[in-house]
Length: 269
Image (cartoon, rainbow, N blue to C red):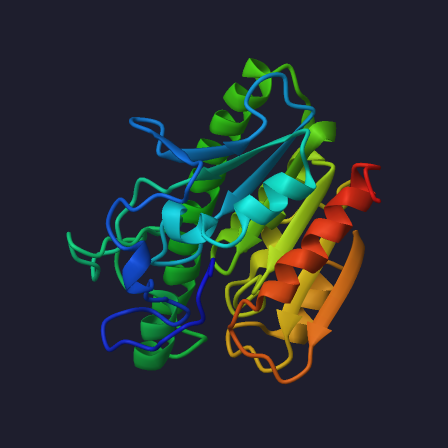
């Protein structure tokens, strides 16, 4: 299962997803441990891990939903890795207590799409909405960096042992934080959403030693292919475009990403 494709809702921003019924609430993936107060699920090798693989969920998603169908396969294929799935502390304002969803980029005022529709792309209101979105992204990146520092330090690991994998909205943080930290690897899956419209290239470092694996569908309505390729042009990227696929997350993508990580860590069969 894992991340699900976008289903438009009247009150949800573009790119928001609904979780399948089986993943709602506090349902956990078998083998997962929800650490209360830390908002994260941990899988795989918990004692003396050799690598850390972090999965970042998408908009209106949760750690439990993001983990389903992904981490069990990855944990089996990477027996030396600790897999962590943090959950944003920020609830989406359109989700319910019975079906909570979370966002990495809570914003105040008009969101970018609304500001553009009401005032135009050249307006002060639109520029203000871009700045507010970037403020939120930077804030979440700082929070994620602090959390990563703590987890890496706890297990005696470094950025060279780290892979950040982001799904949809989560790929925004994975790309920015991963590149800036010089993580060993970054996986972008179903993203980076609206790389051009959100002007995300300006938040990326000019260079990075991180290696990228980018997996998207050619018919994904939230992925702007040319701006995304320009945004990631400075980095070592392996690109995969699935013909005819939209904002879906087929299981073959997870197998492809696992194979890439095994090569990256030098544990390929």
